[in-house]
Image (tube, rainbow, N blue to C red; front, side, top):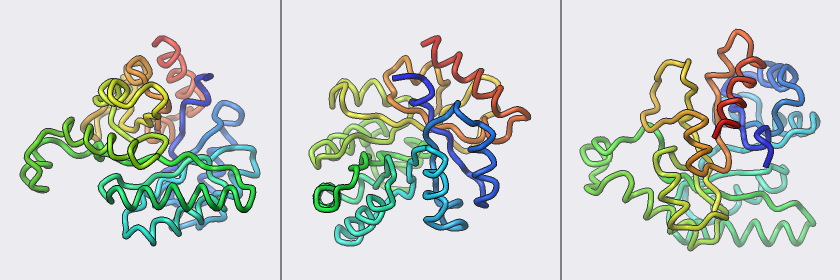
Length: 239
């Protein structure tokens, strides 16, 4: 897969105009963009349609986490919206994930829609073992929790998971090379640390087997986003 198809740019901005300006500015360099909470709440579903009009794919990053019926209905809406990829929280449980897969498969076949890839969030990259133990009352390490949730997602029939760079190799070994790993928490060497803790460089993530890497701030805040993309691509290719 070409590097430009593996790099997902996170449109973590608060207006449709800002998001579309970035899509237009990056032009043919990037094929997939992430639409998360901030942009989706401020701009609505229409932002997805407008990105599609520019010939780009959308990763809808709304991390569905609710009772099975509610998540399944939201998944149907995402499928009808034509997104390439969307996610749920694996901690929503097996039934929630299975019913989501079933609903998406059914509506895709019934209405002749492209089936989006469905992935599950394992653990947020801001979560550490200390947070897991002291705040969430889960005594085992982050890696054990990620392994458990990745296995649950695979059992439910999902296409893959969202996981930090530190768990890529473990998930690939356990779930197989075809099980997708989408990796946030990617920080080029020239960017400062932020609220994400379990991070890696683009080179490290690709080397360890990430199928897609998600990057936002390092690109959005750069003086020259296109130049930032060029440097990131060199790191990816060096893996």
